[in-house]
Length: 105
Image (cartoon, rainbow, N blue to C red):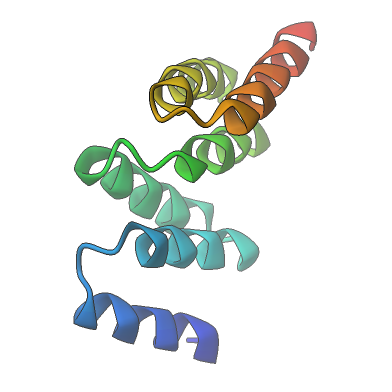
């Protein structure tokens, strides 16, 4: 296990409800090309903290990378709604752009 992942897991033990830490762990698995574990962590975060806006773009990209375009479309669309509700118009715009690019493929 890499050192950064170990540190993140220790942080998670100390703050089990910290969405950023959970997100960072998932991203660490993405960087290790362990998509199955990353997906599991992203889905868990989606279940427990669906209002965590950064999740939607990265999860959508992971779905795209694994050629699950239907799931990518669904998560980008849901993310747009969540981002707008959080008044995060920048992220809503980025998610909308990702959705448009996905639909153009």
